[in-house]
Structures are given as C-alpha cells and as structure tokens.
Length: 225
Ligand SMILES: Nc1ncnc2c1ncn2[C@@H]1O[C@H](COP(=O)(O)OP(=O)(O)O)[C@@H](O)[C@H]1O
Ligand SMILES: [Mg+2]
Image (cartoon, rainbow, N blue to C red; front, side):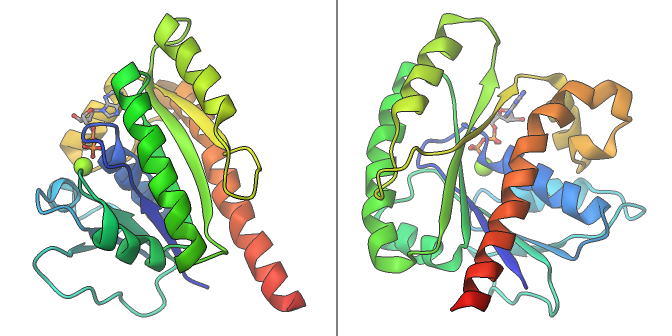
C-alpha cells in the first residue's frame, strides 16, 4: 500500500520542507521507495534533492508546479511538500491526495493564531474530501523551557478535530543545527551519525510510530469493511 503524507501549513517558514525532506530521507535510508512531490514553486524540496549525493539512498523528486505528477510504480511513500499561502481549492486538491496530514507549527503567537484559522479551514475540508485522513501537528524549532514553548503546548493541547477528539501533537522538534546541516547536504538528520543526532531522533520517534500506526489502522479497517 502506498502511503501519501502531506506536510502543510499556510504559514511560511514553519518547517514544512524540513519535515518533508527529513521524512523522505528517513524512509529512503530504510530502503523504502520514496517520491518527494514538491508543490511549492520555490522548489526547496527539489533543490534539497539536487544536493543529495548519488551514493545516498535514492528519492524520486517531482516539481509539481511545473511538471506532471507521475508517481513511480510501487512507491511506498509519497511525501508532499506544500507552499505557503495555500487555501481553498488548491488546498482541497492536496488534502484529497493525502491519507496522512502533518502540520508543523512554530511556537510564536502569530503562527499559533494563523494555525487556528488554517486548522478550521482544513477541518471543514476534511468533511468533504476524505473522512479517513489522519491529521496531526508537530511543534517545530521549540526552545525547551521557554514561555513560547509553554504557551504553544497549552494551545495545542486544546485543539480539537471535527470528531471532538484531541488533535495529536506528535512532537516538539528542537531548533538544531543538525537540520541546517542536513538541509545543505540533501540529507535527513537520520543519515548523520546517531551520536550527533540522538536527541533529534528521539523527538522524531513518535512521529514515525504514529505514521506507521496510522497505516496499520487504515488497512485493518479496510479489511473489516
Ligand atoms: N528544527 C529546526 N531547527 C533549525 N532550523 C530549522 C528547523 N526547522 C526549520 N529550520 C530552518 O528554518 C527555515 C524554514 O524552514 P522550512 O522547512 O524551509 O519551512 P517552510 O517549508 O515551512 O517554509 C529553513 O532555513 C530551515 O532550515
Ligand atoms: Mg518550504
């Protein structure tokens, strides 16, 4: 079964490309067949891929704003990176393609307010496009023990999905030079020496488990149906 993971937030700079490229690198390094589909005309994910050494686990890149989206056969993971300012129809079109949606969010009041509006827009869309879609958020560039981090957690804890359930907050990813270095080299943090990235890998563990579990829950419910 192909998994389609959309990384989305209408706010720029919150970490969409960082999350998308790290996911792509993680699965590729584990031998999975990965397509990284970049819907952002700025093509940061495509550029990331261009920096990736040919000795690295391969990832198929698609610049969706200027070429047709043809997913190679037997792809295990389609990772979709999205542009800032995504709303309405173009947003609905991407949500429709996803079985899993991840929304990175920065711990700043402006980003939190923007995310509230964006989340309610997505919640409305989810009712019409795909009832099965799994949605969760990831706090990004969090400096631990700061007031901003505390406020963000309180806010995120209160967020609800349309079914009344709490929106899963999968992780607080710290601000780390590892992400900057990985971005420069076309790598994910999972492709650096474990000792240098232990803390980051730890923070990702829950995201990866949730994605994996979401897939199992879905195929189970399909079997039962
Ligand atoms: N956890 C992090 N630690 C350090 N730098 C980060 C982190 N997340 C993102 N960045 C940096 O912040 C900038 C914006 O992130 P990016 O992933 O490009 O956001 P978006 O795709 O949502 O616009 C990039 O330069 C990226 O390398
Ligand atoms: Mg981006």
